[in-house]
Image (tube, rainbow, N blue to C red; front, side):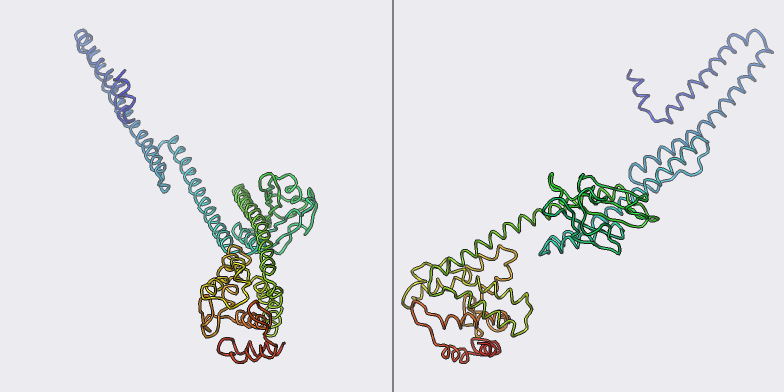
Length: 463
């Protein structure tokens, strides 16, 4: 058994030599033995005939050896080439195989390696497309401020990456009975802006939750190839994403459908996360607004202060022809600029006499406290600079950072002047309000020193 096992494990070439010896050499030797010891002693003429017979047997054996050796060499070449391909060398080829069967095998092998190369090129192309789409998606996820811009980027990037001509993303409305277009890209709209569930291909995909892929002419997409996948999160269908292009170009493939389905899953997750984030953010904003009202409720002397500052800022911003976005930013910051006072004890806020140095240090912290409250909210992050620095001064004498003219923006200059003016004209626990004329004189006195001169001049004009 050990010997038999060792033969099985030998190379094909050695097995062939052993088989040749057993089938050719050994029988000839036996024949020679028979002739020499048995027949040779009886008949000389027969001996001569048998010797020629042995000669031709040996010649035939050698010719057979030579033929089989050539066939075996071709076969070993095929085996070696297959091994090279298996190790990753797709450039390996079999040329000029001599035997018909081996030649057919070589040709089949050549077709297989060509197909492998084509498949690898397709995989590399798909990988590149996926990398391009995911790269753009990643950039969008890192920078987008609202879901609409995010979805627009996704649709455009996908149309370009999959070499489509038109793309359309539709979402199920709040009633759950219709699809409405969220974003469409290309010269042709794939579907009307509003359709019922079950209506058309996109409506059926949304209703059934199953993707659709066709490269044939259809009634709905005549002369177009179409691929449509559902946007789903868990068991919930949120909408559909479809691409089309004209027939005659390379057909949409199953790989394209898989890629689009995977992308649709990521879109669904992003939309759900955005919705949850928006809900949480809205709750946080409402909580902060309630806190701001609580701050005013704690101190009757500052009640209405934030609202008046917001009105002054709005008038000033429009007088400087600032964008409506900046006007809104200033108004929102004014409503929340003293939110940090929630962290200042009541006995300091309501103290009917000047504050001590230690108490002033605590009050100086309220802009920082306010910034820390607002910073976790993405939509309020732009307010943080205004809230933190609304007590800064042009000459660097303000708090909490003592920044000067080079770091104070025009919106912040506006807020500083509005806040100072309202503080002067409002009763405080430790002093009475200053008259309107005295307040104007105070602003003029420090214009260009503590406060921006142009802002002061504009503010006095609109009072």
